[in-house]
Amino acid sequence: MAVLALLTSCLDGDYHTTYVADCDFEWSDFAEHNPDSIYNKSYVICGNSMVFNSKLDDKEQFGGGFTVSILCDPVIEPGHVTRSQYCVSDTTGAYYSEGFAVFTQNSDESLMPEHDIIFIQSDQGQAVANYVHVCNTNLLANLMLYGDDTFEPFTTGDYLTLTFTANKSGSSKASVSCDLARYDTKGSKVLINWEKVDLSSLGEFDSIDLTLTSSRPDLPMMCCIDSFRATVNISQSN
Image (cartoon, helix red, strand yellow):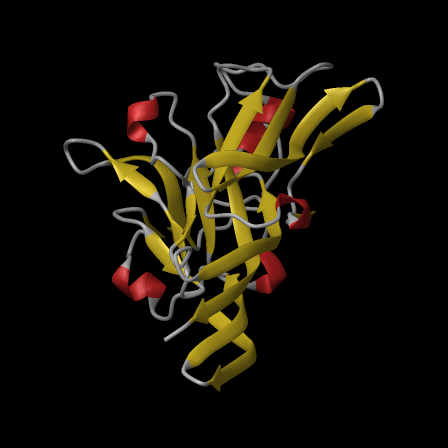
């Protein structure tokens, strides 16, 4: 969780700072404290100012939102069974890091957080999204490419799309979408390596919601994100 200070000034009791919130989900001793190599028992604070939310059910079991994971499985072939639904299909996190986040979209909205990513200093300043990296889980990549005993592989017309929607002052402001998989007359695509997505058109935000949509209602709604970056400006007057 690195925060790069770009500019800080304190004049006549006023405080101003601009920094980059770099949310890379890197935790020291993560595997030691999480023997199953995942964590989704509560929200996660990254970059000192961003909360990545999760929601538990009435039995304190994970329902939806973000899971932090260090599990990788790059094996993409017919019949492959991954060891965990929280494995990314690449060999590492983005930028060869260890940790990343897996977003799970529960069809039961009561088991999803109200907002997925929250800027917790919105009463003190502004945040502007820069970019994020996205990838498929190994489970979804293999299902979409090869299917299994209960799921037919993707064919022409099938897709899986991830949309980021920025909210400001309680209203939806702007959105950015990217395809995690798409089969059409122009060819086919299933993302199995990290891909950078420009989020700058979202502008300022108080929160960002993620939405997965697919032509296949039987497809599990999951994806991986890493290296979410936003520029934060904080101002305080005394």
